[in-house]
Image 1 (cartoon, one colour):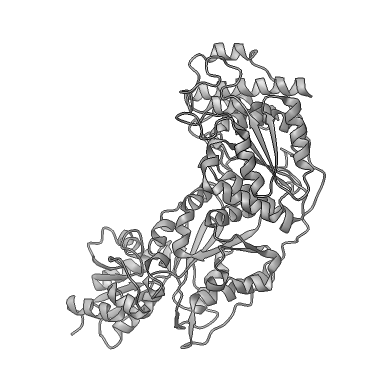
Image 2 (image 1 turned 90 degrees about the vertical axis):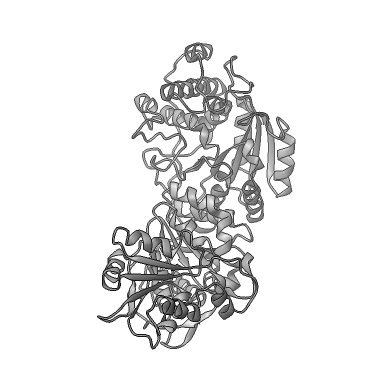
Length: 604
């Protein structure tokens, strides 16, 4: 095997050079350093059926150093999954072989390229294997040494050690050189080993170009029991080509003399590697669906939408055995505890590590599970890049942000979600929902289970009146007109908490239409345009910053109609105060709205 692996590694280096040369861009030198590691993995340790990528027993390979995509695609060619002709379409318009891997290829679980994300996602896949699927597959994650500076890597390391994920192996390509120069620790594999070991990992330090040492390390990793394994492999960037090997200044660039480099590596080869398929296996869990019995709340009662979320998710979990929940150590506040109490085997405590929480959810959905991840709306912003990359992964995630807006009251601005709508509206293919009462919340929690892409539910801390009957339908992309007449002169458009403020401000005032715009994205443009034509004046009211929220969504929907839109939003920096005081201080409470109506000449 060593001789074959060495020849295969040379082929992988040659093909990385060839495809990046054809593209005129790419990262051949970063691919060349890890070629021996991946050659041995494919030749003798990976268990994968390329003809059936959905096979439950398949191992999972995540290229956290996604810029080494030429290596990954060269591996796919060697395994017979793609042709040489397709390999040479790398980075070209319409090609599946993008600059960084994405699930456009059926063998890629998740998109990578934003460094520090592959290992956290690998933790999610490994958790699914151990705690949900009950399958013996191994998760292999190829990491770069540069990304070891990312805090998310150590969130993942701690979580994997705590959970005893012996089915997870991190292979760290310690090639010493980053993008602009040497990495912090250079070739000091011991520095990395000490950190991993501190989190309970078994560590193996090797020469990453010694195929026999690689083979032994990979075999040891698969038999590690309940400890995740980190293989710290000392390698040379640009290995095998004297013009670039272990030299600075060649990161992310095709080679200047590819013909000479290919000749130095022994020329073009056409070796095929027989990757062994896994043993037949079936998941221990069966995904069953039964009718959902959502909680019902009495009209005119007062219930916090966060409470309705927790109770509705527990009801959904009883009906759908593929639903899982992830928490950022705030389940008592988000009310996710209701699900945790009912289904502890499907509840995952990620602690105060929001990046790991989102990454684990991405990994679980890659295995076919339906994850809901919840924390305070403000704290989801910490995981923004993971959410962004989840969209690139075409992941189906359900995110829930509680304690939204100034309405949380005395806790002050550090706890207030005031930018979340902007963040999630800007996410590609997202759905953004902002319910105003408990029954509406419950209905939308159920609806989210069937949505594709990233969906976000924004719920409030405080109690609000129940205005809708249980069992009512709230389609995504819809809205509710709560007050209207043929003589309306202004339309108040609100979502969530501000719906109740708008209704109170409009009480007793003639000519005021009120719309509950619970679906912020997609937004009900037809209803808005009809209201704009009928009243000629829209006033949006949102417990959010003016940038990127409900007001801007409404502006986009009525663009070109020449209608005036007045936007009430949180424009100051809040302090600590009671919820009602916060709303008025921000200019979005009922008295503030009423004052705006008077200033607009609608109310006397």
